[in-house]
Length: 104
Length: 266
Length: 211
Image 1 (cartoon, each protein chain N blue to C red):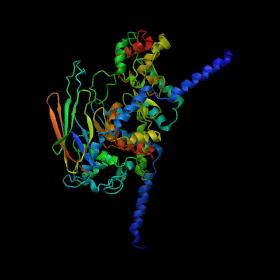
Image 2: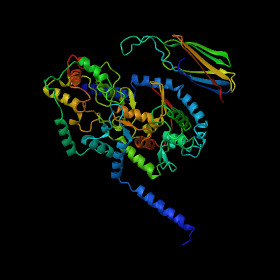
Image 3: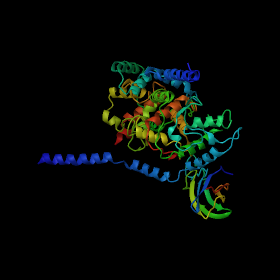
Image 4: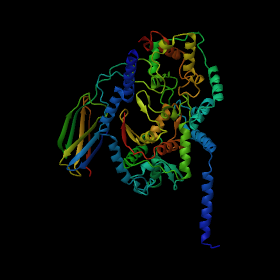
């Protein structure tokens, strides 16, 4: 289980404005470490967002996304108190889900 | 005729040189574009939201929130507090900046007898980081207006000025070594002249800031701490007089400048 | 006297006394309080010992000049510059130039001497932080003058070589209140490292002088 995400979902009009900061190294697999050896690729491959259990966003990421990715998106039809859940899965098979309630 | 030709060639050369002087280099333009791009979507908002929750949360042995905490504008008043800090507080009998005042309220209102705030983002300091971001954000756009009425506030300014020009350590660095001239940079990082109004105000109010390079949210105490580290100085203690004095010096120098916090930096 | 007025009067006198005492700081008081504050506000961490907060005569004099906004007294400057020049230690073997390739690595490195650096590890020169040096490196600072084509412009006479060494060793010998650190005097760089930097600046094969 990876490190916790910081999530905020705030209602703006009829949509929830969701902002997520994920904690992940996002290694490209092309960088050499201090020892001169290639640091193995390690990055988030799948991202899923759900609203009250229903999938509203999926994303396929690759090594082009930088360390500690910051994601913003809007979900129409959300109401205060709805549950927004963010999940990611990386190329090593590690995954993480965090959830938050939509606030006013 | 030869004289005229030389003259016009010289004029053309001078025009080209002065034009180049006024324009930014391609490198600097690139950096400006990068800053524009990362400003759209600042993770600092997440700390701001966390800070708002902590402000209202009943916590500590007294099960009390920060909602009676007086940051200088009255109990519980958050808006406008950041741009008048540091200031003198009669209940504490001394000048305090935002972070030390938050720690004081943690102690006196919530009853946490010795808030653990000496290590960045460890223990109670984690909460201070979020609270400071929330409080600073509430003053966004408001003009810096640190009070300089109380003798202690004036003393802090004078001591801050002396700290600013204090050369020491194996590199003989003072704050002024890097921060007292126009149009200079370290590597490609532009250095604000903290002795003049606009740069001082913008630099001072750009903290708290989210730093992309290490994914951390730094309030002012941490920024000062790291300055001294890079100067090869010993470590300034959290909330020590030198940190309050330098904040006062910068904030007063920046009087009237619209607050930027929280910002995003490389 | 009206007894109701007495406490208020006492309070007024008391406040006036406190206010009066606090208000009467002179500039010299602030200078003294400032120095006390620097000693009290800092603590040792890692290799950054609290003793680093102490100022030698040069730093004290230049700090005072910076604070005043006026240039340092000329006679004092000459005396202190001469004293700093006397502290320069030249290489015992009489060789001033090392390896410019190593010099470039040292010039690029900004490490060393902070509390997050391991004590005893070699320090970097931090040179690119303030100076342009080779043409290829565009990430350079402007706190100091450009050193590009340093050797090409000055030649390699004994005078230039000795001056350059002394400047790296103790920059304060030539311009007392310069921003440049005293790399040799403060033992921030070893003799070997400084020889490599000399080569970077003066070796005709160095990229600094090649184009």
